[in-house]
Image (cartoon, rainbow, N blue to C red; front, side, top):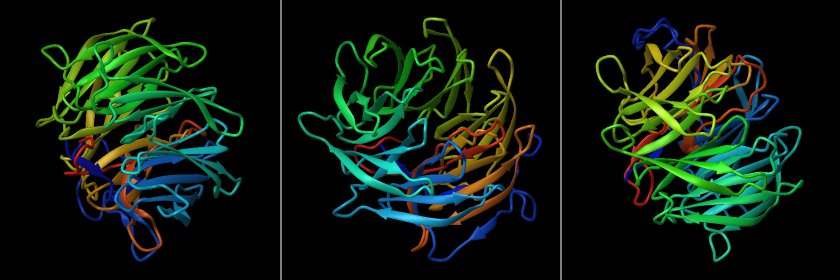
Length: 416
């Protein structure tokens, strides 16, 4: 499989459904150049719960950057943590914050490691603890990471080890009691990509990029997983290169991107977490889904944002009450290798990473989901955005949104 790296991060505000790519308009972003940002292969991105700080990983730059976030979504005061004898950020990829914002978790794909940081009130990081791949921890090709809504359990995927692990989380953020689920006749975990929990925390959804599958697990009160149900690529399901997965705020609909299939699927979700009634949107004249990857919903569930790493685009859809999508608006300016996307809680700003551009972009978000006022932060000596990969936001209020974009390069063993 090829590997994607985010080079740029942008914030956009969509227009009314047309393809937007004209100079001099809201798609003509202000650019920030120089030696301030390390965004080579920009990948993952996440916002603090109060929305005042943003964290972004750069898979090619092997860095983790912290920014202050202004009320208008603009970024400043970058602080860069580089892979060295202290920090294991070789292939920094997945990123997640604890619900209280006091601990940050980062996966290192090439380093085969998972790092835990304490987070200060000003966003700075300290008290690093590193968990490495060994007989106790299955972190070979560590990639996706997420926490339960109560912060008591952490889930991490190992894309090379073809395994999914569950950890207990202590009050100081430390991890213990790993339980590992491996690819076998019961579990389809080949080339694990990403994962998402249902809003009530009772089901976990996991994509297997190499296995071309989407799995649903029941989650017990102690975080353990059971009752796997596997949906495979075939006549009914378009899951070739399944990557990102997201659920509607009410948990009644699930959206999954299929990178190699250039497709986006919508499922209805039953009360037991089972999936049915798939509706498939394919790349073509109406939809730009070439290398579909990042998927994020607005906090009110009325708009969906999707990145296309091969199509070099970010699309905005209206979401109907039954989960169906309509009114696609496609943004292409400064989105080469668009990869990941996420929202701030107030829904007013969106952040996108772009692997080919080694950049991070911030957009304003209108009430109709449209994007405007893009501000682009490019890779430089000051900003650690080399290979920026994914993006994620913590929710503060229903108007802020962050999106990320990444480009795919051939890196053995990695996801598309």
